[in-house]
Length: 261
Ligand SMILES: Nc1ncnc2c1ncn2[C@@H]1O[C@H](COP(=O)(O)OP(=O)(O)OP(=O)(O)O)[C@@H](O)[C@H]1O
Image (cartoon, rainbow, N blue to C red; front, side, top):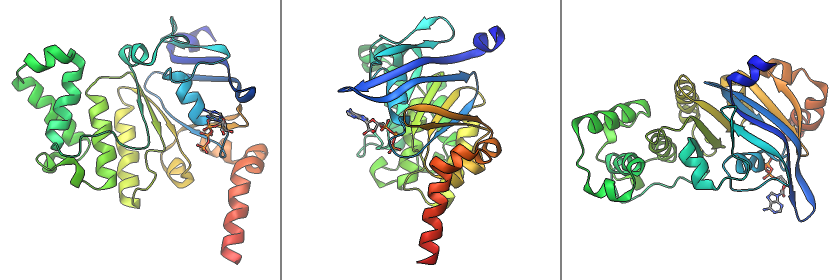
């Protein structure tokens, strides 16, 4: 137990979130290991987004705590402090600069690490340029370095934003439905990218696309009505009756009614 806590990069302990008396999250525990890619699933309203909001400081829990690297209590810290500590959050809508090129977007993201004034004065070194190129290769946009970001496909915009976040060197990346609206090919490329990222960082992905989860998840956390319902491999999760009932079963029923309609 002690060992597990020592290697955990993030621990949510008994987190409860209330919105006007309504408990959106109730006594939720989430332990994330270093270099882990974790999928967070569950039906609509299960509290998945809210728990990400708690981790990144956007929402403050009524009770419980969030501990980073086993020692830093981030429960009451401000969003920007949590980001500076190394927890990056990507929302569904990409926040890229559409009139700037892919390269320029990455350049801005990298210089944000240095603070605004330093960034304005700083001249890009060869090492900086190489880092940006390596990042473009990782997100598969090296051939589009000079494209205006606004002209990229939906999937490419998402990858660009992920690349921008990675240049800020987060230790944990929080992603909310990263493959929503993507083509099948883009979805697969995103899964591969997430595995690549998880070689050196921890990643939490909130996801509804069950095929994507099945193809790319090793460990899955299922939430239901603000609580932890089940945690384990996709196989274990799929084999759990309660999960089938509250989540997968509902979807299966929907599929059946669609296919027989
Ligand atoms: N700011 C808010 N004020 C009031 N209620 C909220 C607020 N944010 C979320 N909720 C409620 O809390 C519950 C959990 O919402 P949350 O968005 O975390 O669920 P989710 O699992 O991410 O769902 P989805 O998959 O549909 O995005 C829902 O019932 C939602 O309506």
